[in-house]
Structures are given as structure tokens and as C-alpha cells.
Length: 169
Image (cartoon, rainbow, N blue to C red; front, side, top):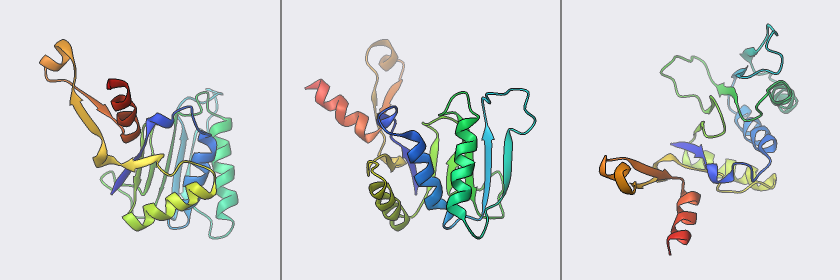
């Protein structure tokens, strides 16, 4: 199942803590990584991408260093790529951990049991249990006015939709 970041939490939680917590969780069952700076602070730097095998020992320390490297060298702290996966990987392969752009572009490929364990890690680290949601639970409604007449929709994450419903009443 694919779980995505609920953008309701954008700017409301410590994004570094979130990336660190989730990446460390995934490093327990992933063997490889790819990381990249999308908007590096130093545009002339040659090394804006890193990839390879995760170490067998000291994975938490490695992930801490990797996430710090990404965030310390990115002009926009929400705009980076980080993939954690197992080999072999092809373009068609869905990575277990996929952060390919900004904070709305998380894709966590987890079983229900794995997702429950991730939620336990989120709780242990003082992060909301519902910061990620089942991608199938997005709610789309017909847009108002001309946009709705043209068939356009407005889609909401579960938290955003709950907020929307409170404001409609």
C-alpha cells in the first residue's frame, strides 16, 4: 500500500525530525540509498548526488549524516530526493521510501503491519500518528463555479478534508 504525507502538517511539525525518523525506520529493511540536492546552496559543487549501499553497522549514524548533508546543503529544506530501497531497482520499481521532490511528494510503500510499526516510531519521536495516510483515502470533490462546470476537482488529504468540513458547516 502507498502512504503519503498529509500536507495539512506542512510547517506544523519538525520536518527534519520527520525525515530522520522515517529514514531510520526504513533503513532497518532497505539495503541501498540514493540522495540528491535539488536546489543546492553551492550551485558550483560537483557532488550533489550520493548513492550506494547502506552500511551493515551504524545505520542510524549513517542516516543521520546523510539527512544532515541533504538539509545542510539544500537552499529549500523541503526540496530534495531520498530513496531507500533493495536491489534490484528499475525505473518501474516502487521504492519502499520515496521522497522525490518536495514535502508533498512522499511515497511510502508499506504493508499494513509495517505502517503500524512506522506509526509507533512516529509516536516515540513525538510526531503525529496520522502524518502519513493511505493514498486511497484522498477525498476529491467537484470544484465550484466554472472550474466545476469544466469537470475540475479539488482534492483533500484526510486532515484537510476534516478541516474543510468544519468550515462548511
